[in-house]
Image 1 (cartoon, rainbow, N blue to C red):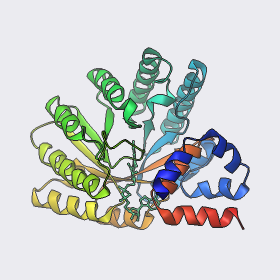
Image 2 (cartoon, protein in one colour; image 1 turned 90 degrees about the vertical axis):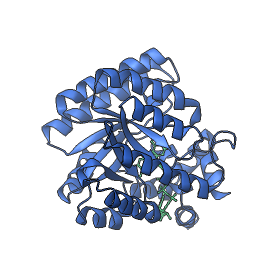
Image 3 (cartoon, rainbow, N blue to C red; image 1 turned 45 degrees about the vertical axis):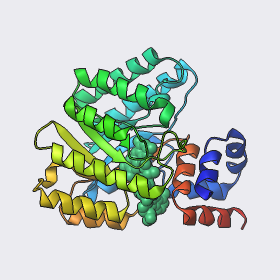
Image 4 (cartoon, helix red, strand yellow; image 1 turned 30 degrees about the vertical axis):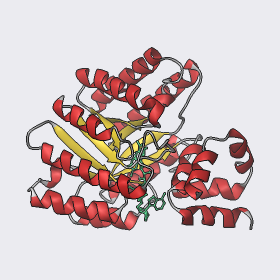
Amino acid sequence: MLRWMMLKLSQSTQMKNLLMRFSSFRKAKERFVAGETLDELVTVVKRLNSSGMKTSVDYLGENVSSPEQAAMNKAMYFSLLDRIRHEHLDSHVSVKLTALGLDINEHICAQNLEDIVAKVRDTGSFVRIDMENSPYTERTLQAYRTVRRKYSHVGAVIQSSLYRSQQDVMGLIKEDIANIRLCKGAYLEAKTIAFPQKKDVDQNYLVLAKLLAESTYTNDVYPAYATHDEKMITSIKNHTKKIGLPLQWFEFQMLYGIRPDLQKQLMDEGYIVRVYVPFGKDWYGYFCRRLAERPANVWFVMKNLFR
Ligand SMILES: Cc1cc2nc3c(=O)[nH]c(=O)nc-3n(C[C@H](O)[C@H](O)[C@H](O)COP(=O)(O)OP(=O)(O)OC[C@H]3O[C@@H](n4cnc5c(N)ncnc54)[C@H](O)[C@@H]3O)c2cc1C
């Protein structure tokens, strides 16, 4: 119920305008968002890199409604990539296609994506195309396929919450383009599209995690396991050990501000750990999704709001 409410709130402009008036609400986002400016972001990335963590940076700003906004987002990715190169940051970038104009026009979005991917090639970095809610799933995977035909340093995201995901994973493996971040899925979805029960989402996560791990021997597959769930992580560790998968053939990913203890523990055990670091002024939707994932986060913010 709380998850449903927070995910609904994440889409409400009225609530956004109301909540943004509270300085305690704006302050609370600092736990999950690296800052609003590129300089603040770079400080956080340098700190994470110096402790041995790799990063993937997301410039917040989904669902743009004009080509100009999409072009501004692209320009920010260009500036970000320049900073990554000049300051030798160990970082990938993550992009959302609705930030690049998917709601306006697929061609504008595809061109913006290709421009970013082409620029990334010169920096030696990598682009992960984030997965948004289910109205975008098919178009996002198609855009991925198109750009992946030309460039290898780009990857997709699959959500274990969706019924279709097993087919999608098998398709990408068969096509030899399964550089996949596997997550559970952060959005509100209908029962006709996604597993309504968390236990089924978790079970599907493990099925897909094993499928990806086992396919690395025969196909060009690179799994990035994005979860903070210790049960998932322990199963993946046990399974990859059992099949003898080298630690460099996959990675764990977690969100900035969530389970830094577990991130460090995995790194100390020799696993590759990448932290997803969002920044930018448009943090409201991202922040509400993080609150939705854990009731304690909501109570913490509410307590401060009414103090
Ligand atoms: C690197 C990365 C990239 C992602 N990219 C996408 C994407 O492209 N598309 C998409 O739909 N989703 C994405 N997600 C979000 C993901 O789908 C889940 O919503 C989120 O990770 C919570 O699921 P979980 O696997 O951690 O498991 P859960 O079962 O939700 O949580 C397991 C445990 O992790 C901890 N935890 C989880 N979330 C929080 C939180 N917000 N605050 C504090 N503790 C928490 C708690 O201890 C919890 O008990 C991404 C997640 C990560 C880690």
